[in-house]
Length: 167
Image (cartoon, rainbow, N blue to C red; front, side, top):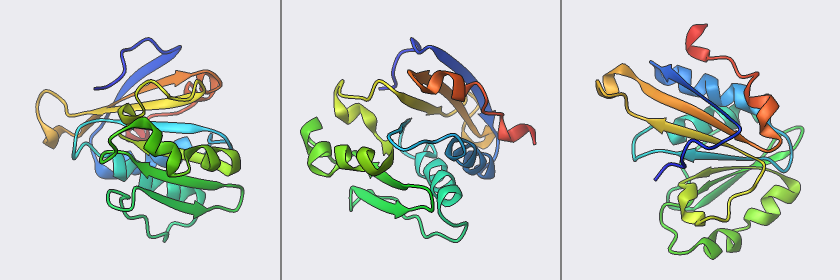
């Protein structure tokens, strides 16, 4: 279940193509700092891993192999400025398991991108960017609706993110 719209900053945009999701990930990466959390909310097949791939490649290399961490639960990447850890919490049974996977350590040394953050059961970081992805009423062929909800230190940075579909 996606978080309610109670964030300090919230805006919605249509991403008609896969490349727009990747570009949004890259735009988020440009504003990402060590200690940041980006939470990706949405149903199966919404494009969470696609957005994460664009973010990670912007921080590492355009050729970086970025598999979904569905079975490994976490993948770590070293960028030139800081590390980023990509968590997929779909298969977790309790929020404590995320911390056993090294979520706290990942944030000490870099940033974290989290798919299925609802598995953290209220233990989300106060300073985070929630990216809520949904399928438009007309269906997936129309693209994806993406709502950005900024919390804490992300409030001013999220306002600076342009819609990559308008390029």
